[in-house]
Length: 422
Image (tube, rainbow, N blue to C red; front, side, top):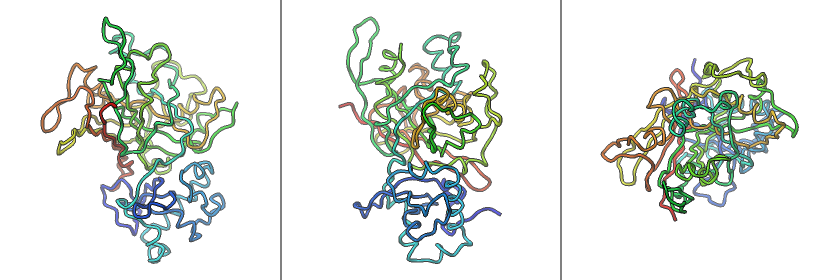
C-alpha cells in the first residue's frame, strides 16, 4: 500500500512522504531565530532541530542529529550515506499515518511543524565551489550550429569529455531573489566594443547536483562510486548574457556572461527519493567512452521539467519549454568522475550544474537562445506580446517533478525576476 503521512498531502503536491527533501529555513514571525535544517512535507516544513532536541534521532551515524541545528546542510551531507539513510528512515516513520510519536504529541507538533508560508527559505548549503557542465548533446549541438554551422556543431572533444568550466559560487542565490540585468563588453558588428547593459538576457534550464562526501586531494572518485558522494539535486537557472558571452568566450569560455547570477531551488531532493525514477541514460555512440567514464550500471532519472515566463503586469505565465533530465548525454556520475580524475578534491556543499537540458524536439529547448534560434523566431506570449530574449520585469520560473503512481517527487520552483540594469 502507498506510504501516507498524518500530514495531509495533495496528490499534486511536490512534497509527499516519498520525497522528504532537505532545506534550510527560519520562521518569518521570529526573525531572530537561527536558521536550521528542515524537511518539506505537503504544505509544511518539519523542523529537524526540534526533533533532535526531542531526542528522536537514535541512529549511530547521525549522532543525535546535532547537524540539523546548523544554517546549512554541509555538516549533515558530510556524514555520508549511513547518516542519510538513518535520517530518511527516521523521518519516514515519524511522519507516517500509523506512527503516534509525533502525530499525537501536540506540543512537539506545535514546535516542529511550520506552514510553508510562515517560513523564509534560505540557500540550502554553503557552496564552496561551483562547476557548470555542458552535458546535453542537443543543447551543445543547437548552440554549436548557431555559432559554427551544422557541420561543426559539436566540437570533437565534446564527444569524449563531459565538458565543464568553473563557475562563481558567490552569486548563487535562492529562488525568489531578483536579478539585475548585467552590463559588459558588447561588440557591435563592424564597430568597437562598448560597455553597456546586455540586450540578450537569457535563462538556462539546468539541474544542480550537490556533493555530500568529498574526496582527498590527489584521489579520484570512480564512476561507479559517484552516487555515494552525491547527496541530492536541485533545479538551477544559469542566467546568461548572450551578447557578452559572444564577445568574450574565445579563448577561455564564459566569464562575465555567467557570473552575475545563478538561481537554485531551496529544497534538495535526495538520490534515495529519486531511486524509483531511475531509467536508462542515452546510448553514448558519438565517440569512445574512456574506461574511467564507463558505467557498470548506466542510468539517469526521469524528471519532467518546465520553464515559464511571466512579464510584469501579466495575469498569467507562458510555458516556453518542457524537457526532461533523462535527455542528458553525460550523467551526474560521469561528471563527478571526470571532475576528480585529475585528483581534484571535492568538498561537502560543492555544486555541479548539468548544463542546459534540451531534448530532441523544438519544445525541449532549454534556453531563449535556442527557442528563438538566436533571436530569429520570437516566442508568442499568452495574452499578447512576444519574446526573443528576456525583458526587464520578466519572472522566469523553473519547475520539475518525477511522477509516481498517485504521487509526485518534486523540486518545487526556482524563480527570479529580471530588474533593469543599474
